[in-house]
Image 1 (tube, rainbow, N blue to C red):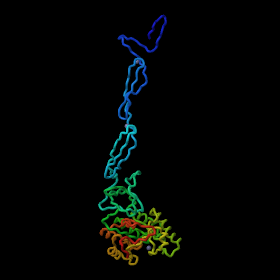
Image 2 (image 1 turned 45 degrees about the vertical axis):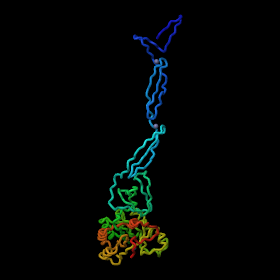
Image 3 (image 1 turned 90 degrees about the vertical axis):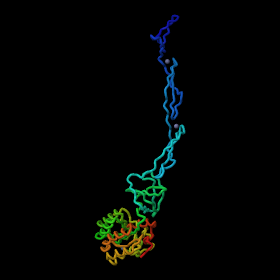
Image 4 (image 1 turned 180 degrees about the vertical axis):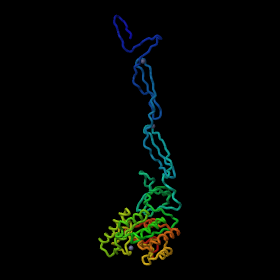
Length: 386
Ligand SMILES: [Zn+2]
Ligand SMILES: [Zn+2]
Ligand SMILES: [Zn+2]
């Protein structure tokens, strides 16, 4: 503090305070102005700001960091596929700079194994899609109808990967049948069961040979014990059809009685297989438009009638199969006769050796590319009927 005496008056100043040190240099207890930007920072370049002392005018400066880009969302220029990497870009809202990114080519996800040569997938439901991936955001690449066939590439528990050199994608596994294009296909069908004594012999032979069949069952034969056989067959991939409640000749019944024959059987089939029988087979091959309308499902007959019920002879049945069965056939048999069920193992072995795959009726239709229409009647896909 300095006190100046001037003309008898005393003026006391409080700030600023100038003092002279021993080295006689002036020091200032600065009073800074506010910062002001001298060079604006940009997205990528730093800027500068300064402030000055209002007393001595000394200037202090400081770097202002770059602000960084304000990127918009990534825009897809080209989706990544199994054949080509994808391309994306985004643009800064402030400086319009563009940044490009390459998305690597798609890879088959973990848990898939390569399918063997000549394997195809045929669609076994009325509509499905090929999805571009197996996650929830996957996109539908292509709609497929019943019987569409496409090269199988990889399989997992729940999905198949299909595709050609142009595109690849995924279909839920339970909506296709996997088959070998180089092989022949046949559907063995067994009517009038289930039977607690004889049906297990068929199931055992199918399991042993890794084959599937279709069973046209009677509602009044399905009970607690035989219901287990439907469950076992379902887990082997077998198919169940409705053969009425008590083997009635449906053409002689009222509409109400026909409906009851089918619906009572449906309920039990659903209880043990998890779904209503997707197919019907009118007993005695007796049907008319009313029966078909009430079925409201495909009515499946056969192309090869083994007459096993008539001959009741294992050797004779095997000989019939050897002589008659061709690619696309539906074979009629009955799993209530010991002579028939005892032939199953040998029939499977013979047909496998002759390059057949043994599939269900629906699978056979899909492999042949023939849609099964509700209330339509089908006799197999071999072009023969006898
Ligand atoms: Zn100052
Ligand atoms: Zn920018
Ligand atoms: Zn029958």
